[in-house]
Amino acid sequence: MKGDSIATRTGDTGETGLLYGGRVRKTDARVAAYGAGDEAVSALGLARALCTDQLVKSHIIEIQREMFTVNAELATADESRHLLEKHFPTIGTGQTERLDAMLAELEAAVEMPRSFIIPGGSTGSAAIDIARTIIRRTERAAVELVDAGELKNHELVRFLNRLSDTLFMLARYEDRELPAEPYSSRSNEGEQ
Image (tube, rainbow, N blue to C red; front, side, top):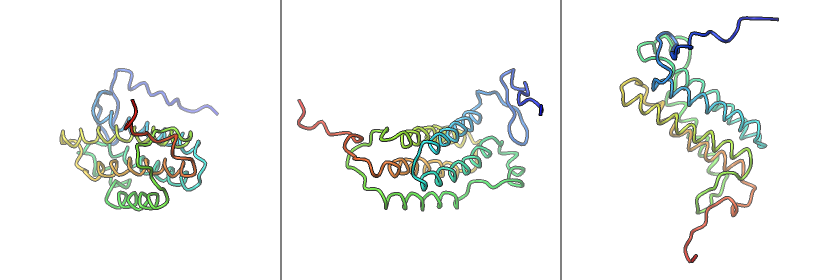
């Protein structure tokens, strides 16, 4: 069955529409923020497909759903936020507290080495680590919006900060049965 094309062609001139109205250049800081968030959702999808642990997979899908909420907020100009809130949830302290609980659960289950972790213990954890770094970029872009007075919900930044910590531990949890030695950096002390 043939339907409408997804190609609207409205972005052919380098502009895009925000949720609930308004058009901005595709180079706009808001577009950079939700674009990075969109990349993170896709990277998390890859991670979920590659991970073997069912708890990790269930946490990832939960995080992907929360990121849709983040991206909707980032794609809505502050003057239209009331319209977003009519139809969808927004990021609040409850979401950050859920991440704190998830982080505590993971920290209790994983013994961390005393050195830096080199990503790549498994394909699943490597994909989570890529998603984590994209979340850090999303966070930096959100902070830029806050600093410019274009994002009033500071809890969203707090949520993204906590999310990157949680993803770090989720990757370590995925690899918890692997020997730590090949995937941690060693001190150069005593080496000539």
